[in-house]
Length: 133
Image 1 (spheres, rainbow, N blue to C red):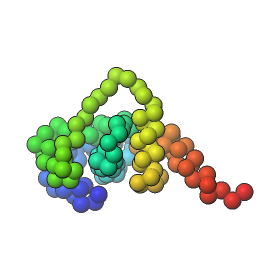
Image 2: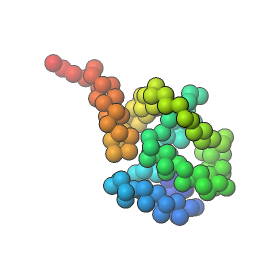
Image 3: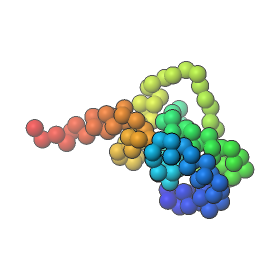
């Protein structure tokens, strides 16, 4: 993932400036937010199921998509296909739940500042088998 982040930053440095505005407003590091966006795209790549990003990941993704030529090239290079963004008016919490479960499976603990308190609750619930009481 670091090479994917470096690829983005070296080819479109303006993206970091755009994401920095989101990061400052939400008191998070812009590189961390971009890395979380890449993790989300990677999750889409490894599953055929519909997934849903956190609000902050979605905002970063929107900024990335605006660099249409590079976004297209990035998707083809790293995923072998174009990853479409398909917004929906229907709020289906099970899709976000599925996303968080997949995130935990592949990346362990999600950053709460980016993925929210629900993600941390799911992380803690997934660790229940480690209790020794």
